[in-house]
Image (cartoon, rainbow, N blue to C red):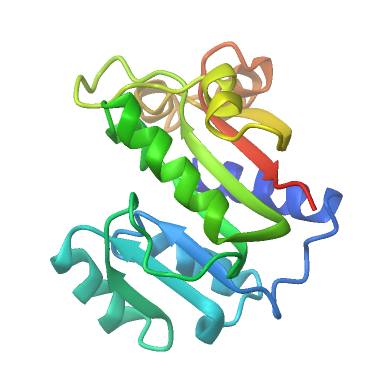
Length: 197
């Protein structure tokens, strides 16, 4: 699942001429222990140009231990502690599907746009549906577009539903690849969102 996601991210970065991450200032919303940020460091992003925010302090402490050259901030996504137009790229990986209140999602999206530079981008990866977890609510493309009005969108439906992948992959890897290529049972959207200049 991770390798499929990484391949799609690389393809998106290449097609949007953002493959060179060295000089980008990057912020991840809901960074957890820093796994996604570590992936972006391996793609060429500079740790000193990366900031991760999360509400859970123990996760940030683990991230700080593992990736000490990045900046880690205990903060609320509805009130980001940054000046306007401060970042080139924002990352949002499965944070929004954990938020059930529409007002909170709207506030977070507005804050993300506020701290993003004109012409900057958001890389969104989140559930469309997750029937096995009642504490999450999937977010379709229509809702994403409503959260980020006036932006441009490049969406991809990826990631075969994790329960299916875990069940089938050990015995039928080719079948899993084929099922994933059909998109029908893929459970996530990967969306490149560009803020207007």
